Image 1: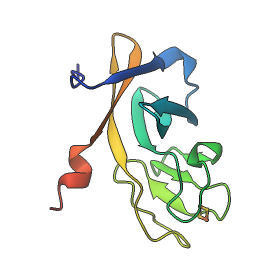
Image 2 (image 1 turned 90 degrees about the horizontal axis):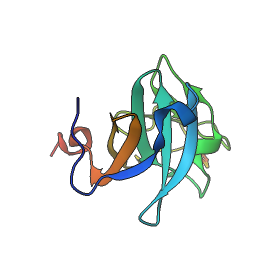
Image 3 (image 1 turned 180 degrees about the vertical axis):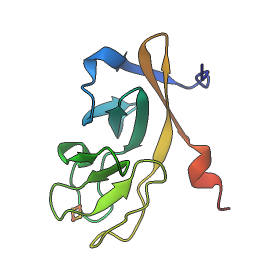
Image 4 (image 1 turned 60 degrees about the horizontal axis):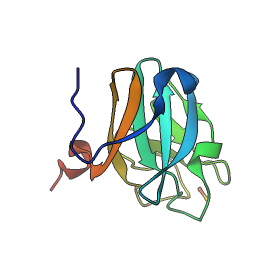
Length: 118
Ligand code: FES
């Protein structure tokens, strides 16, 4: 099982996050969209990089592991935060998320995926 980092925040029981949906949570004052796909969980910055719109109000594309902005339909990778369609061109942050003892925990430390290209 994945161990949470010391700064991890419990955002709620996995069972309370419906499969294939996103929910906005507040982690230390930062809006985060938490997405559950089966037993996998993702945490992505909730604010679209194109305009100030909540991504958690958009649709989750489970097979693609993407979330669609509800305003102009840019889609963002849940794994990297990179937009895959216009009009958004800038990535949104991606955070560590894991399930620990039945709870989803999120750390605001950027995940290794987003740092891998540096
Ligand atoms: S506000 Fe998200 S794509 Fe325009």
